[in-house]
Image (cartoon, each protein chain N blue to C red):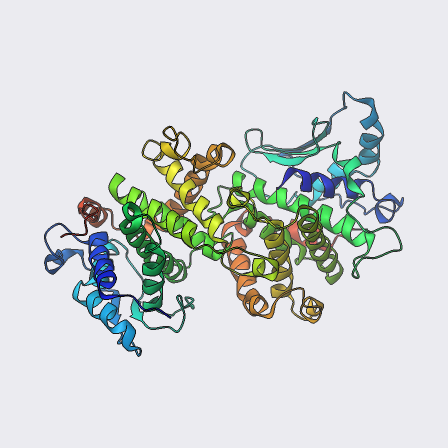
Length: 281
Length: 284
């Protein structure tokens, strides 16, 4: 992930005044436990991040993430932490088998999402804040899964992680698919507009695709998974028809890659429980 | 539209030979280095403009050489490679379908190579052609071997192509990787708007992807990409270069897990022992 982008999403979610701040959080099913997964909220040095950490604790962010990932039959320990990073970021650290979510992202957050009660192009604030957050988190889960299970990745890993995020979004009900796909796509659209198009040759040197490419990739994965659900991507001319025609095959490519390289590491009875849980509540 | 002149056509034919020709002659391709599951077809072009190219490609037995190169691969079914006129520079590989190398792409490579500095021209011709052949073949290998592909398929095919390019010695690696990279650089295309929706990645991205796999796989050979001689350009920025060993290892892991089980190691040694690329003068 592009660090700036990562931070934005995560912080957006955590700061969400709407759905996530309601007391009726999703109940974590008791059976979704995995002894290899540990988590910790690390106290920040800078006291200004204390309230953020408290909010995360109250909302049981890491407890939920640990439960969500419980079906993974891990070869070793896996850690989830929130911490102060001195930079707005969130990432997977392969040397420590650890997903790290930085407190600094919170401040960055809410600039991206549309204002409350003022959707942009049909994107609501909740949809963007929740969807982009989950998308970013699942992107990092992608890095973790690829690393811990030694998954063969022939293409560019950053694109593969976006595919993972969009694929996971489609494994629940339609609301989840809509929210995460649309929120994640909005994120890339926003960054594409904020940063402008890459022009110089060196602008393409990074390991990440251009924000504009990532936007279309996410739209394509959603449309490929469920053309009826995401018909408006075509109706609104967001996704060019030439690309749309290939999205079914692109989704199948990811589905097969997931089935061959990741699914064998997933506990099937636990994953059913994960799929039945309303994580976005 | 300008069509390639005869000398240029001859040049590329010679270079395609040099790309993959054993030192003796294409007529003497080792009998044991054939792949019975690779079928090759030279299709006659409809356009007269492509006929000279088609003739030379056939005479030089380019596809026969590609088949030798693919000899170590134990394929569970037939793989067909066609050279034909497509109406476009490339024709997408379809599942179960043939690999298609288009006369148009050879034409395009010639035209772009013609804009290169004289000392880079042959390298661009060789590299770009090998890239096109390897990239298209990679799609077929993914399909036939049912290889799971994470990431965009075209980038995956590029990474596999680059990975192969650095496994046949320094000369092959330098010619093919640098030729490919300069071919992309010379394309002159800029991207905007919905072009970013294309399934192909921008030429600049592909440029860096090939160089990165090369640096990761052959760090001594490609050290100049990050530590150029005085006055030369640093072709690969440090920030990306730092990741290239990891990118290469990632492709190697994927290759070892998913493709190597289909490779005959004894035949592979023989294929690697061939002097695939002759010096850059295009002579046999």
